[in-house]
Image (cartoon, one colour):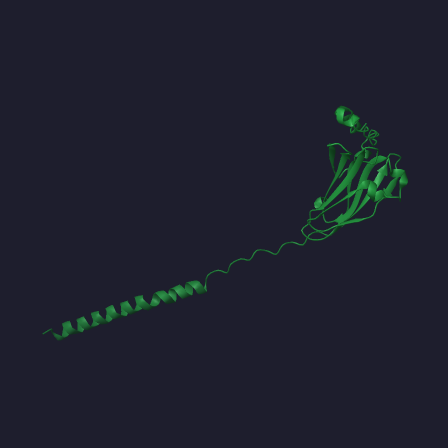
Length: 203
């Protein structure tokens, strides 16, 4: 038999081992819970900034024509994700006169196109058989909200000229630039591209 002193020692050892085992078994879930509870909060992304307010914008297209053998089509694209763009096309003739056409409303991410001669109709007969440049007026938060292009087609021929809208009025360049003097009548235009290029140069 064990002496009383050894039995007491054995008892305390057993108690110590039981206490350590209990601590190991039950302290880990509490530690994990505390870690989860005090984890730093996830940062939220800042809200998107509101677009700047709409202001008056202008684009210029250097050429349109309703001369015999040619037709001009204007294409207007609204690049905005939201918000319509109302565009007022203004035809400038070679004598400096301006004629505003009916306003065109373009929905977001949509394209509107129209024939210039058809848009003129009977309201400005002096512009039939004429040519000049185009001014586009609209309101948007940025210039790039509108993409504009003129397509000048040779009637009955597979030829077309693509003229993008720009932010600078090219007819106001120092040195007396003026609208080029019209396109030649097809089919002569088809066989003489160099003549057309000369018409597209500003003096």
